[in-house]
Length: 475
Image (cartoon, rainbow, N blue to C red; front, side):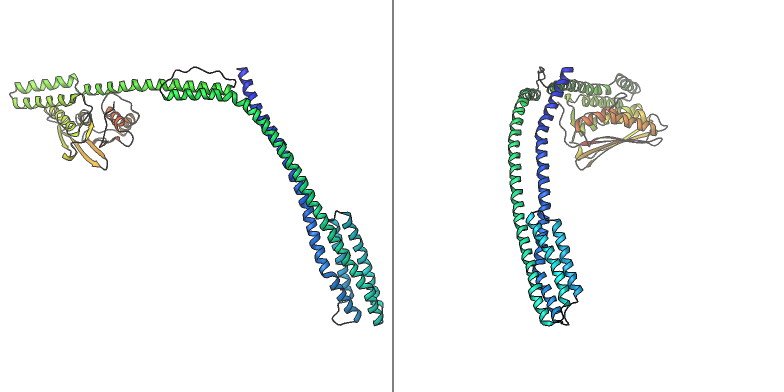
């Protein structure tokens, strides 16, 4: 047992090593690749934002500022005040600080430094401009200072945009190069992993395929009805346990088939006993005694009729050894039984059989109705005071034949009714009779058919059996 546990642990450990040796390096490379993508994506987004901001700034700053300062220089009513224009310069300085936070290359930083210097110089020149009183000098100062500085700012911003664009290209190239390296490394690792995996898989499957093929042959033998199995020896305990399970299954199937064979024999014995039970010595003795009494009393015609009924009863009981007979024969068998019993219990027994003629040819199991009539007589009619009646009826319901045997006898208490219903449901027998009939119906017809019992104490009992219209004799 200890060595088997070791083998199982070794197999599990081997599978873990294969899994970990494959997944861990791949997972590490994937994490590195995702980190690089995340890092470069952040830089790419910042560079793109810088280019967008700087491009927008470069498009409007010089023209807007030159125009505002021109209006201030000529003293136009349309001009803004100097504080508003200075605020534009301060906004531009804030933009430079924002660009500086996202700028990584040295050339871009140099351009931003130059732009900061130009903006500060521009601010000083704007203050100087408003101090000049003469118109000609203001215009000359405007052309030689303000416009030149704004031009330098635009030129330096263009340099910044160019530097950032070139750096963006470098970032893309670097990202592409690193991704190619990682993909190449993953490819090499994947090939190496597949090689290791195939090598270990071949070693592992060699110890599995051959035992599995042997077990497959065993299963095929079981399907052909061969249950003699020889245990196999395998290096893996799970294979040995599976083989032992197949061997146990084969033994159980063999035992079950033997049980089925024995149950079939018991079934035929039970059916024979059921038939023989109807012709018990007491019934025969009482019937013959009644015939003798009729002859001695001079009632020879009644004695002849009773002998004729007894003859029909025995002939139908035998039925040439057939288990399945037409409904008309079962009806005649039950009628002969009730006629015989009516001679003995003429003071308490009446009966009536109402089965349509068109149903007479339907095949039914022998002794489907007569045991129910016997049960109604001995457990219903005989236990009540006064005369009782047994009513036998038949009808069609779609693809089924429904037969009922009712009596107005003693009936059953709810407890006794439940006990009888449970005995029929579970197949338990307290002698032959209702349970035997229910069991035979289940045997011949299967689900959807069977027996129902309705009873009320002091009012009587009704037994209903539901049969199919088609039946095949059991072999």
